[in-house]
Image 1 (cartoon, rainbow, N blue to C red):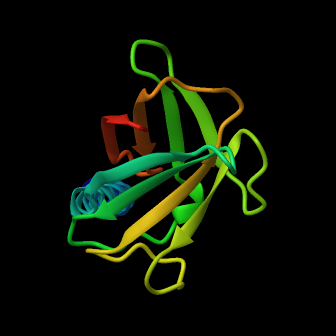
Image 2: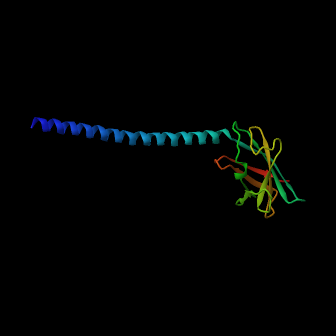
Image 3: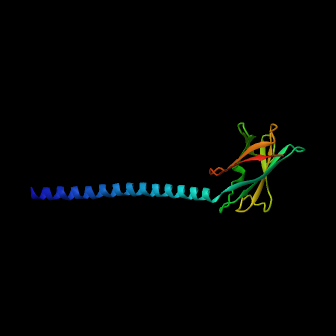
Length: 161
């Protein structure tokens, strides 16, 4: 009986060590995943905080039926997804109309003019001109909202003159 008890204890110890090893591998794997996810979220939030926008000026060109909006990156980080930016324009007391980027600048869309260096990167201190092609006439006082895909927003009420 002594030998079988010793063997049983040895088997029990081996099984326990194997199960503890498997459990620790699963836990470490999950911790690694959580750490990676947390690190990615922190990086995204840091980048979002590093990009800050300021709508500097806007005016309407009645000849070309275009609204020109000048926006400056006053943050500390460059932004490279400039074609993913959304623009909203509307009369001051009404809902905003949505405008999406289109290089050919058809009605209901906008295109972008890089005023300094044409590198498709919105660097800190750089001003971009958004050329909005409206689908309707707006009053002289409008609300403009510029929204980046990372959640950064700049909104101003401007007189288009």
